[in-house]
Image (cartoon, rainbow, N blue to C red):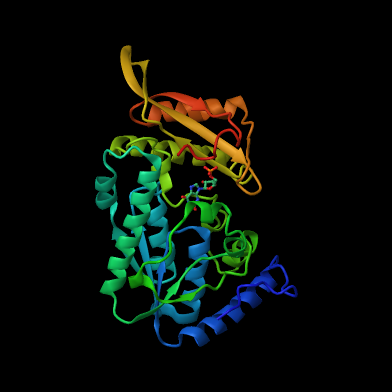
Length: 326
Ligand code: XMP
């Protein structure tokens, strides 16, 4: 196993050559650590867990068991992409768990943000632990811990993702990217052949779209979050903002206002657009999106997303606002 401290002599992984050397070294270390035993990994499709999955697949193939839990709060197309990349292209041993109803049933009527987060976190661990129990011979648990997670125990991830592992997931850990910074993980991801969409993904909170469907989550309003988010991402990709803006998404608060649709009064939701830049997520500034782009996004959301009659742009920096709304 590796130490938790990055040696001063360790070069920053900035090139394909250095990434390839890192990959070869890690494959060796993983093989030595786990031998012919099985390793379990919760594969969300985020860059850290995806890079860990790709490394382990290279090292131990089908002895890596990936579990992808669809909690219903993922962005449009995400579960499909995980299946396509890992099952179809990398031939991974991937278990897909459709837990959508289970999560949404538990969350029904819950409007307190902290309670929502706790339910999502606990349910995730429960689903994952249940899957783990069904598989014989798991000896290790792989995790996408990265160096800032170790360094910044007061950092944003630690702040949001509290709580250790339960007894039944108490396996020895395999953490091949734990000495890397995020930009290095991305270079390694590219070298491993992961698609750009995965490698250069913006940060996405653990509770997913759940914190953007503000208030008690309903299936129809959650769809409005997911569809509007997909439109925003598509339009940002088209005009080049996707690679420039640090984080961007839509929020649909549990609030309706009067509007007019097809000549009739329509009491519907408002979609809020958020686009921010930051270095460390502790403070953030708002991206000044040109009006023509805003209008294009507005027109598409109003035409394509059910139950929405207004589009707003959140111009609040952090502080006073947080990046997410919950
Ligand atoms: P806030 O809203 O606190 O968010 O300004 C700062 C950054 O953290 C992300 N975020 C989370 N990340 N688990 C995470 O791993 C979470 O529960 C969580 N909640 C917020 C948020 O998207 C932003 O990038």
